[in-house]
Amino acid sequence: HFNGVDSPMALLARADMALQAARSAGPGGWHLMNAKGASAVPVKTASEWRVFIEQCLAMDRLRLYTQPVLSCPQRNLLHEEVLVRLLDTTASGAEVVLTAGIFMPQAERAGLTAEIDRAVVSQVLARLTNEMGRRYAVNLSPHSLRTPGFLDWLEHQLRIHQSVAGNLIFEMAEFGAVSIMDEVHCLIQLLERNRCQFSLDHFGRGFSSFGHLQSLKADYLKVDGSYMRSLGKNRDNQFFLHSLTKIAHGLGIQVIAESIESEAQWDLLSTMNIDGAQGYFIGRPG
Image 1 (cartoon, rainbow, N blue to C red):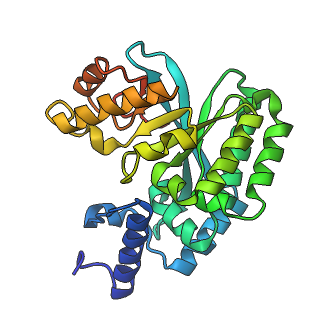
Image 2: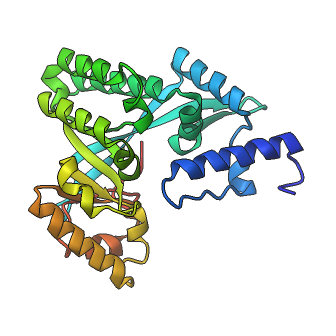
């Protein structure tokens, strides 16, 4: 029994949401949905999620937040990561902002990731046109790269906006990228033609990280946040970061640490030759 309030149908819907989130988390992924967190998320079946996401796209209920990435230790702004949100309402009419971790697994199952990625890229390019000099990192779903016509559409958009395209970095989770290597190589070539950069996100969550560094030709890699937990006490994580940074720098790849939430973590990173950092200590999404 979950919380004494949900119906059996609602419990099944929440369990399904947790399952999809765990699948999207990559190898060994899991997702804990507790009563407090679940109560803030409107309950939807798979078909209701599809309709909801389609309506958000049609009715302009997609919002972009950004989170800064700073150089380490100088604290200069390197770029900002774009984080997508959808606006929903509860049964009482209250507005709820849904994070990508909630709705993207459902979008993947519904085959709607390409539509979301198109909407995000279009908004970011429009924003860059009015904000010359800003640099943004945009996440792409592996499912989008496998959607017929998506890469052609992306290159067309970058050519139309060639004056600002060079200020874009496109990110993809490492565990997703290694599962579609052919498509990722096509993406990287496309980005090189249009002066964009490529970043591997959540690096280290997979099981064969170092073997793909040279072939993927990333400009950046973001170390998975799990390596930042207890960083000051965990010698294995420190060794991993030292080794990864040395190898990446040898290949001309910059290393960024995710999920930095304390000054102690920042101070330690400042001694480890990491190029940049991102997290609540650096700046919250806004």
